[in-house]
Length: 254
Image (cartoon, rainbow, N blue to C red; front, side):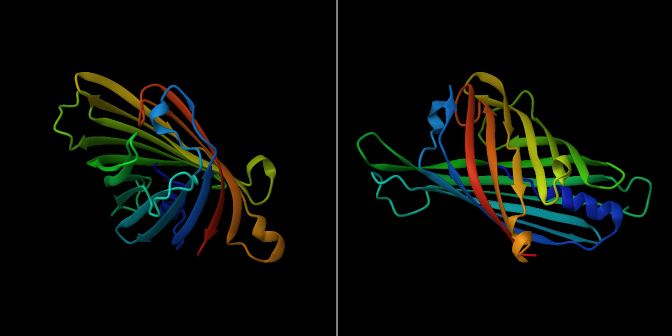
């Protein structure tokens, strides 16, 4: 669910002292799930993601909101069936010092959803509040075309259970003009965190690599991109591995 394809830009801003703000809308069609975590089947689903990033003299703010829609003809429910959002604030008061690439981060995650029983009735569920705090560090090549962000965060999930490993590791990357192709960007993230379900303690792995091509450059509309996303997960919304391939469009408003 988490999207962080703009986070590389936030860290680039801190390092090269340029003014950048960005908002984009992504629309994905999900081709379905493969793997053992079958509780999260996604056939005939569409996801919209609205991302934003804004820097300032004290750091930057990154946020996104996901909505999932079921477009299967046998399900007449005319509403989104899941909403999820994250907001992260990076604090960096030392942007002119040698430690400019190291920031403090605070973050919130949460959401809610709508499920369907076997008898056709619906039920609601919540995605528990999660609060995170920690450090992130920015890495880059000399030309800034390849940027990487490493985060180590303390993660508290408000589920009433004591988590023995309340940490999250996040790695975010973006490679512009990927494989020397102008307008092609390979980006994504990898999250690993500890989670407790009942008496079982487990690690959750979630990664969403994306490949975007700026097709709009060919007709003087750099806002339009086409691309793909593949979600790889382990013990996320189910037990075991799962793979979700998607095809998408992205419109950058800035």
